[in-house]
Amino acid sequence: MSIQSTMYTGAAGLGSHADAMGVIADNIANVNTVGFRASRANFSDVLGGIVAGDNIGAGSRIGSVQTMFSQGSLLGTGNASDLAISGDGFFVVEGAVNGIEGQYYSRAGQFRIDGDGFLVNADNLRVQGYGIDAGGTISASLDDLHLDAGTLPPIATTAISVDANLDATQAIDPTPFDINDPGGTSDWSTSLTTYDSLGVAHQVTMFFKKTADVPAQQWDVHVAVPGSEIDPAIAQDFAEVGTGTLDFDAVGSLAANSLGPINVQWAGAALAPLTVDLGDPTGTGGTGLGGITNYSGASASHFLDQDGSGSGELTGFEVQPDGTITGRYTTGESRSLGQLATATFSNVESLARTGNGLFATSLASQAPMIGGPGAAGRGSIVAGSLESSNVDLAQEFVTMIAVQRGFQANSRTITTADDMLTEIVSLKR
Image (cartoon, rainbow, N blue to C red; front, side):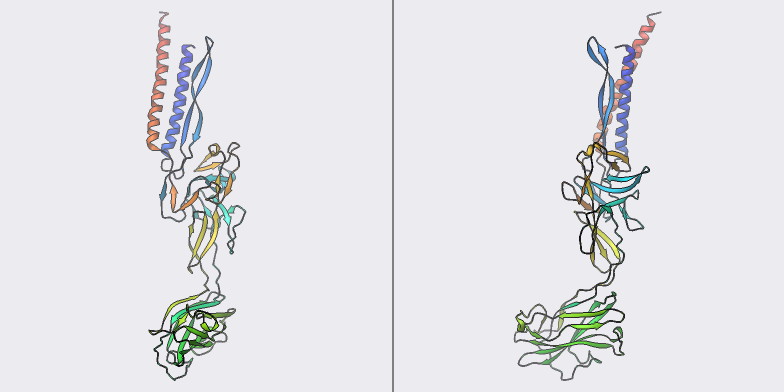
């Protein structure tokens, strides 16, 4: 090997170490980039020729730059649309990157809902997942996740449940119940809000009046609604829509209930058939408990419920570990809006880096295996968190020093070879 080739060998070493320093610089520059994956420069020797029958090297080069796909730390943000993957896998996004339309993969979960209701990343690429219909069935087709479900349709009330106690010591007032003066001619009342087919709220009031003490206590129940809210409307404050008699046994349990189904024609809405559950009468084989009781003590309602709801607007959402996205509405209702998709690869290190925290498939990486998080080796979703860069800053500084020393040593090779050339030139003098 000549002195000149020695200088070329040193120059090759300078170049490879400079390239390695570039990889280190890129890692350090992205130490705070969400979801960033550190790279490692792998040196490779270069064969220069044969001297005395032996192979002589000609320096080094960067044989490959390997992406390190180890898990980064998860940092809580409290933002519902910030998502991280704990374990293997990538978020799947779709759109144009550098003018190329396609599917891309990322560990960066800085998502938001755009003006059209789609879940997108920082570059407005749409996050992919599976839709869920009103019945809770998950679609098998991968598609853009659309979280603006619009107005949640109302649910008309069809059933009312009352859990209350009627005071067994209540004295009997012989004045008959009068719907025009329900408060003055009843012993106790309770109300709850119900909804018609259009989602309009209506108060349903039940007035209770004690009518008998012996041989067992007996109470009448009168179900009333606002007179101005029915069709046809009436001038009175209340319209009576149902009445029945409640019989209690000697231990205060409900023995019989004659209140049957009620039909209410709310103004402008569909006819509303209502059933009122006041308990399980012993006279029909029930326990007499779990509804209206007749014990000594103030009359009071313990629990009132109904199965309807008004229309609602989306106020926020939560993402479960399996990627299911649950929307919260102004009505207090919740509904599943979709499920995130994540992707794994048989040869993840062969993914092509495209910038902006994105990767694309290559021939070596093979096709992605896409499905719901938490299954088939795919990691689970951690909501309200972001995955930090997996760059180990301390290790990068250690590697930087080693590369710097290598660069200095290669430069010394060149200067030493140059001194040798100078010595040869001086032989002519």
